[in-house]
Length: 489
Image (tube, rainbow, N blue to C red; front, side, top):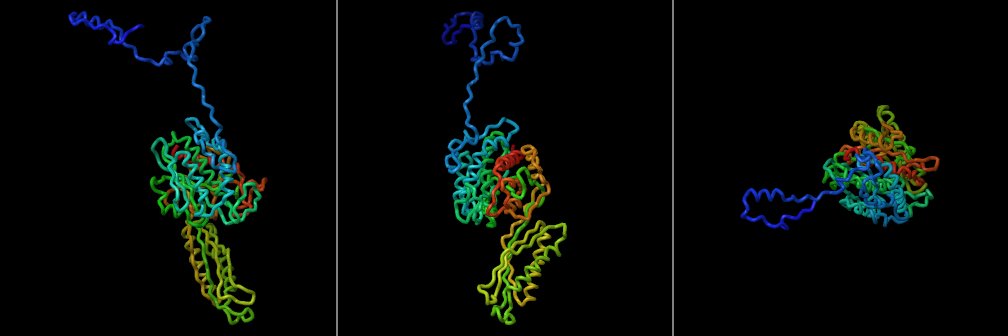
């Protein structure tokens, strides 16, 4: 229909009667609204297919825009240098459907990225509170995702916030970064390049897993209902890194509703998961005993009070602290791991030093063990003519999993790793300072089996030949991402 704008038409004479003027206005064609032509086109699967065909071609449909090619997720530079890995985060990020994220497939797509990071960290281990290079890589990777990043928390810790598109709770996920003073003997091509230092507990894998989880959840941030707080912790290995981070406010601004942490576990094979409510890692404290005697000549022991003999008696007597004072249904450990006394072969020294660790799960058991420990040490030392000085240090509480949060992790495991064997009553006498965070905020600490005896990858943690099957990396990353999703997805 041809029509002209109102301004292009001749005006109606004012002398016309009101009826003529209204009639003329009514006859004018109204301007048509601009309509999206696609709305008028029939769908090729709609009513057109129901009409009788008489040799007429179907109406031409507008072609959809061509899809932009997307590089495969996880494509990155060679493993030796991780610096250029985040040049294009958007291109590297995995793609998901709008619902039911497949974190396992996404983690497998990102496996080269995760493995390269893990090996880079493994080649450059750093002790607690000295993780400068490691923290720098972590911060760089997180900033490349556009996350809000804080560095220098508890010396070398890194904290990052991933805010979802929708309001909701905050969940804290923690990954430790520090290595151990162990000389590596694996012979791996990615073995430690720093003499006397080694990632002998899997923290290199934990750090790489954390960065992979950040990438996967960042790709789903439009569907997140809440905030994910990523915490990369320094100094887990007995130096109190978690306690320092708590003291510096890591549990505030925003305060999390739940906490999550994992550990690659070489005590179990690939395909095993330990997800249990209640105590899963023991409370730990270290003791130092100084037995003060009276030195003398090795040929005249009657003139001396021999602290070495007293130390031997103390070590023997301490074995009864657990076996004769702790109920059999409970668990506790007392281990003397270090003795030092004397300088030469013919001199009885004036004192002896003993050090070790005490592990318990229940507070009442700990109280009993500490009381009997002190009584035994002081009593035996006095009987041997020596005086005991007892010092307890570096207490770390037990890791106690919240039943509700643990149920969420088990639910996540059923979705992302349904073929896995899930152990629901697993606990270990090892300790973990994640307990300081979980004392304040309920959470779940779970274990992911990482050993492969057939490949010789089953050396225990803290061993010079410790290494794990790297196929565990995407499995652990997928499980952690799904566990977070159960809270804020």
